[in-house]
Image (tube, rainbow, N blue to C red; front, top):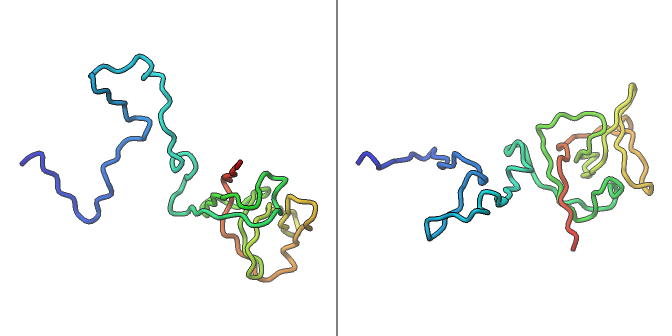
Length: 144
C-alpha cells in the first residue's frame, strides 16, 4: 500500500521535467550512439508563452503592420503582463475598434504607429476611449 498515491481535486499533474529531459527508449535495451546528440522535440508553449494566465492568441486582420513582418492571417501571441513601453507592438481598443500598432510616446502625447505607409499615425490625445489589451511578443506566419 505504500506505493499507492491518492490525489485530491487540486492535483495538477506529476510533470516535474521538461520534454527535453525525457530519454528515448529502445526495445533492445541498448541506446543508439546517436541518441545522445539527437534533437529533442520542441514544446511551443515552453518556447513562446512566458506567462500562461496572461497570454492569449490573436489573429491579425489587415495589412497595417506588414513592414514589421506581421501579415493578414498571422497568429499573434499577446502577453498582458508585459509592461507597455515605447516601441512595443500592441493590441489596443480605440473607440471600440481593435488595432495592432506600434506604441510611441513622446513628451506631450502618445501615438499608435502603423508599419505600412498607406496608414496614418493615430494621435491618442484625440480619442477618449483607449485601452491596451497586451503586448505582442511573437507572431506566427504561415508560408503556404
